[in-house]
Every structure is written in structure tokens, then in C-alpha cells.
Amino acid sequence: MPNRPTRRPASASPAYAPSRRRVLAAGAVLLAAPMLALPRRSLASTASARTLAFRHTHTGESLAITYASGDQYVSDALARVNWFLRDFRNGDVQPIDPQLLDQLHAVSTITGSRAPYEVISGYRSPATNVALKERGRGVATHSLHLEGRAIDVRLADVPLADLRDAAMSLRKGGVGFYAASRFVHLDTGRVRRW
Ligand SMILES: [Zn+2]
Image (cartoon, rainbow, N blue to C red; front, top):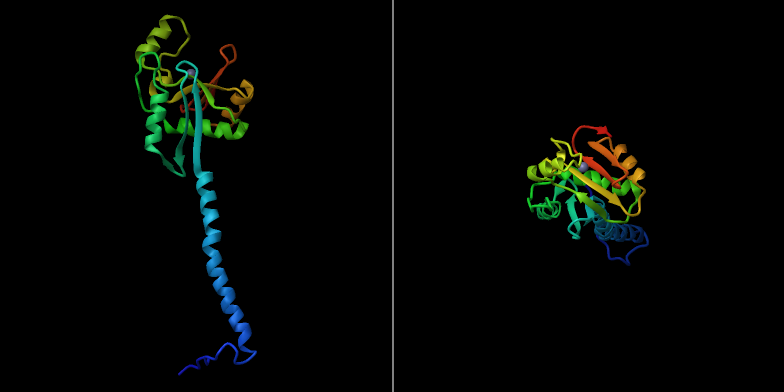
């Protein structure tokens, strides 16, 4: 039979005191553990929550929304983004590629912008694309705007060239620079620039 430590009252001998302190110390660690874990957890969720703010230059609407948390997209939020980025000319709504939102989020982080994205164009319906083409607006026949995979934006607090450079540094999708119209086109197609 193994030796068992004899239980003694706390006041019994000085030798007991250190071990009691160890017990107390262990208890303090146990108590402290959840308190340490809480801020770490909330920091993690803050860091992984991805938020975007928009102002649409054609509809005048604004939207500020947490569209993702960690590796999960928030479906309600995506639905609101889809509506916000609808074809404003005829009201057609199509899903917007969530990766496009991630690219915008990354560009915000890189530039340190605190301004909402000013949206010039999001989803574009085939009818609108044809109409714009006929009016000689220089839109591509197979524009990724038609697939909800492109957006034209500017940021009030970031020079347009810096916005372009930040977008290109991602090495994700296409980046078009439209200095005269003051916007940058981003899409989730293959990496290219113009
Ligand atoms: Zn575009």
C-alpha cells in the first residue's frame, strides 16, 4: 500500500504552510484561467470579424456590415450586400462573390482607410451591360460585373493610385485603374491589370 500524506489541520505544523500556499496558488491559477481565456477569445472574434462600409454613389444608400467571422460568411449579411450592390438601373439582384468582399476588406486594412467604399458599380445585369455598350461606355462584353464578381470603387481618404496599388498587392483578381472617372475596378477573375 503506497504511503498517503497524512491530513493535518492547517495550524498543525509549519511544514504544512507551504503546501497550503501551493494549493491556494493552484486555485488562483484555476480561477485566473477563465479570465485569461475570455479576453483572448473576444480578441480572436474581433480579429476574425470582417466588416465593410459602403456608400453607393447612384442610390445614395449606405451599408456598414459584418459580413464574415473567421471562415464563416454571414448569410444574412451577404443577402444585404447583394441587395446593396444590385443593378441600380433595373433593380436586378444577383449574388456577389464573397471573395470580392474579402479583397475589399484586405484593401481597407492595407490602406488604413476609415472611409466607406464609394460604390460606382457592383452587379450589372446583361440588359444594362448591353445598354451601356450601345451608349459607348466602354464596358466589356463579358464583364465580371455580370457575374457579381466585380466592383468599381473609390475611397475618400486614399489617393486613387494607392487604392490601386493596395489592390494589386493582393495578387488576387483583376485591377483596373480609371483615373478620369476616379475609380478602381476590382474583380475575382484571374490576376491582371489595366
Ligand atoms: Zn468595373
